[in-house]
Length: 149
Image (cartoon, rainbow, N blue to C red; front, top):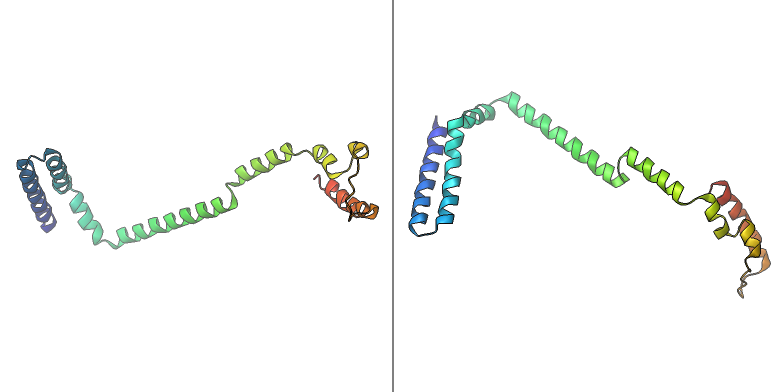
């Protein structure tokens, strides 16, 4: 009962302020003030205030708000982990498949110095390299070929 009285008083005061504002020829501000003033009155008339008063003193309602809060925390944390990992599992699989199709093993083998084009390509010799260094890289090339890189 007291909540309805307070809301009605707030609405009456707000409408009075809106009237004074309109008297000063600030009609846009007066209309906005009147709109804000009518909100508590509308809440009283629709019964929302009664519902809020009943909810504020109900342990079941507070437990429900706690469950909603827990659901929100779980949702937010899973979204944060998902963004950190780079999307959903389905999106990661699609990205991995697209990456495998983009770089084929045949395309990367000549760039590593293996395959038929390697023989026709001239060997660049820098002052610090010897012929023995290319044998060291043959093991690495074999490992990379084995993994399709």
